[in-house]
Amino acid sequence: MKKITTLLVFMLLLISSITAYAEDYALINHYPLLNDMKVANKQQLIIDHIEEILNQSNKDRDTFNTLEKEFNQALIGLIEGDEKMKLKGTKIATLRGQLNSIKTLWNQEKITLINALNSDKRQEKALETLHKLSTKLETLNECYKKSYKQYKLNSTFSSIVKQHTYNHLTRQRLALNIIN
Image (cartoon, rainbow, N blue to C red; front, side, top):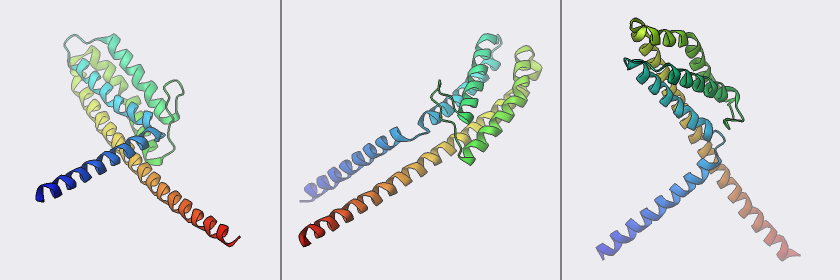
């Protein structure tokens, strides 16, 4: 009897977790800033790649220039939107504030990064700059995750309200049909 009970509890837990995962998967596909969130994560990888280039003894300028251009384009797209990159941009104050602070830091310190390609003396300052950018990007990614959690919560709440309203209206219609 204990084995059957344990098996049933396990099956119930498995089914409920699969259902929750399926609901979460469905919600994330409708999240309007999904691509923006992915690009923000990719920005972190670009910064890591730039750091690798600066740590090399033979610094690859072409790759650096390509990454710099890509970072700039994505950053502007995250703030203002970019149809080509399928970025929506955002009006959410927290996200916009983080993006603007990253843009300001990037524009101020881009010269330091370029100078670090030419001279090892400036390398330490450039690595500090990349660390600051990396920290700000981590904060930005956390903000995107919070935004998604809020979206998920609102969607769940909206679904509950719609279901309740539908059930309530169905009962009223049935009651009116009986009277007629």
